[in-house]
Length: 122
Image (cartoon, rainbow, N blue to C red; front, side, top):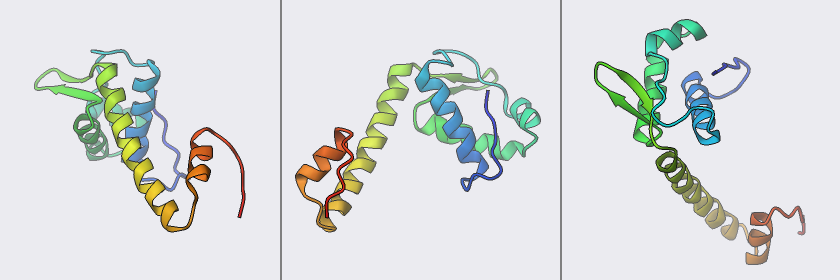
């Protein structure tokens, strides 16, 4: 389900969070599917339960999972999770576009990059 790469520069909780994001957005985890408990997943991955708890907290804050007291954590509706991720990525894109404009990138360069072009003009 989730794997940890100790050579990855990202903190472990981010790897767990990002792994679940991908599973949810790809449909590998369906809406209303129960996630492993914090202790269960921590045991499987041999990491501290606080690390899993932090990843779950962030996923819940982002709208990917919903916690039900006494029952566990469940995948929220995919549309909701996809919309939350889309809004997050669009915000990052706006920040990057603003910085690129400050660096002198032309509008057509930005549009080309959005379309997947690989022009490298100076």
